[in-house]
Structures are given as structure tokens and as C-alpha cells.
Length: 454
Image 1: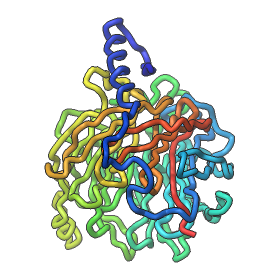
Image 2: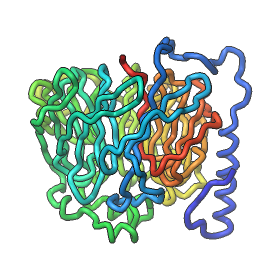
Image 3: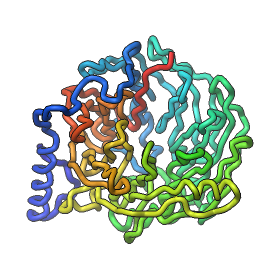
């Protein structure tokens, strides 16, 4: 199996890539599991049997309005909803939904069958659309639309009390909240703020479609990297696991992670300092942050430096921030690369990062190396990471991936090859094995897997 690499260059460089591909292939194939390993069934003990999980795939419908200019085809439908066979990992198409232009990030309500999705465009403000999910048919019924007040809305978070939705707009580097009703529908009361660091000219610096053909933002050469960091770019917003009152906002343009205090009663956000995204030399491009559910540790993926920064999380700092302070709640303890040593990072940017449902591994998607990197979490070493290996995603540009609720299956969205692929995950050794299930979806960009609540 060979890796696709743009602009391969010299024979020596191609030889290096071939060696990387050989390593890659070794990790795709999973050997017979040793006795005692968890290889099938329900490793998390969730007991989920009463309903088939829904796999909701978002797809770009107008690639010409995107800065990163996907190479896949524009989709006719914004959503493709599948039902999953939990025995084989196979998917059956249940419904399609025209939805809106370029749905790009989705969030399933923690306790209700409600789906929120955000739209991505460099030409107009993003929209947060709310859908009622019909669990029997997979149909998505639109019930509300909310202007997000900025371009390329790229992340949504529901707070711990299920009373507020938090969101960020990438291009304008604005973030905000709006309240949620008891049924999960939003109220039209948006509280919008700008990040405080060089975001005032972000709107003027939105790229035009004609320009993006020359400098696609999926490249990682020095010139493109510099262009991407001319302004602040808030990329995600995640609440702390302790009290759920501190919002962390990775800023790709400023190479930092902002801390905001969330007033859960009013939905107001107050800036409480910023933390460097890594100790290594930039550009870094912090994209996402994910917290371990049991360890006091957080993992940040820096998409441009192709590295995971591991931070120790201090719950006592959250108490101080709640009381009005601004002490840093994260302290870095490790950096580790997501690509093989011989693979040039200028041909790769990272996508998603997550802790697997068992809490034993961290996984990252590589766009360019076209793989998922698996790291083992060293519980006795403060949650630091050791690399397990790489698994090719059977397509190009895996922008996103997601586990099913049981933690047994992982579905990857290969944006530029118009496909999604299903893998079986071994929670004992962290290896991924392709199930043989691949499906054609034009320009898939996000995977949401959820067993319906009702």
C-alpha cells in the first residue's frame, strides 16, 4: 500500500516516503490478539442493544466558498444518515437531507435527540441549524436557524447544565453563546464577543475564492503557514472537565489557548488569560483540545507543527478563575509528533484529536500522510504518550473521524477522495483493522455517531 504525497521531489525523498508506507502497512494489519485481550463485544460495558447507532455524515455542498478548497466533489445533500450494524460495522443508508450549504461541524444533544450543525463559508456568516432527529428513520427535521455572527462557524459545545450553546467563528475569530430551551431548541439571544488579540481586521482578511486556488489552506509550506497566521483564528471551544466553567479556545493564528470564564446563568464569556500552545518553535496552529475523563491531563493537536502537546490540568486553578483570577490551568509536560520522522511535515496538517472511549489511547488524523496516529496513554507517567503506530484511512485527507458509543468501531471521513471507511478498534493494543466497509460520500467533513436516546 503506497501513500499519496504531493510534490514528491527527489528520488531519495520518494524512497523515504516508501519506507514510511511500509511502516504504515504494518500497522494496518492486526495480528491474532493474545489471550485476554478485548477484541469484540462491548468493551465499555455500555449494554447498548436496543437501537442501531446513527452515523450522521456532513458533506460540503459548495467547495468554491471554502478557503482550503477541498479536492472532492460538491455534494448534492448536506447530510447522509446511516444505521450501523454493530456486529459487522456495516452501514445502511437511512436518509439524506439537503440541509444547508456546507454543514461542517455537528453536535448531538447530550440527553435529547436533537442535532446542531454549523456551516462553513468565507463569503457569509455561519449559521447554527437545529434538527430534530427521528431515531426510527434517521430523518433530520429542521426546527431552528441561528445566525452565528461570523464566517466559518467551526465548533459547537453544549454546557454541563444543557442551558447554553457555545460556538466559535474561525475567520472572524469571534466566539459566543446562546441559551437553550428545555427541549434543546435555541433562543434568539446571541452573546457575541471578539477575541482580544489582533482580530479587528479578520473580516477584511477573509480570502476571496479566486485567491484560494493559488494558496490552498490545506498546504503547510512556510508561505501558506505565514498567511494563515496573519490574524487570530479561534478554532474550537471546549469546557473544563472539573466545573465546566472555563472555556478553552485554541487560536490557530496566535499559537495559544485562550481561557474564558463562562457565567452559566447569563452565558457571558470573560477572558482570563492565554497559554502557549507548545514550547517548540512555531508555527504551531492549535486546532483542538481534548481532556481525559479520569486523569488531570489535556491533549492539544497543533495542526501545522504536526504535534500533540500534552498538558497537566490543574483543577485548583479553575476554582481561582471562578473566584475572579486568571491563573493558567494547563502546564505542558510533553510534545510528540504525529507523523514518522522521515515524513516532511510540509505535506501534512492534522485534523481531529480524541481520547478513545476506554481512556487508554489518544488518536489523531493526519491530512497528507492520510492516516490515523494511535498513541498509548501512560497512566503512571502523568498521562504522557507513547506512539503505537499509524493506520492508513483508505482515502485522502481524513478531516474527521469518530467512534461509535461502544468504542468498538471508528469511522473516518476522507474528504478529498469522497469516501468514508469503517475500522475495528482493539482497545487492548490500540490497533485499527479495516472492516472491509467503505462508502462513497462526496466531500465528507464530519462524522457524528450516536445511539438515539429514545
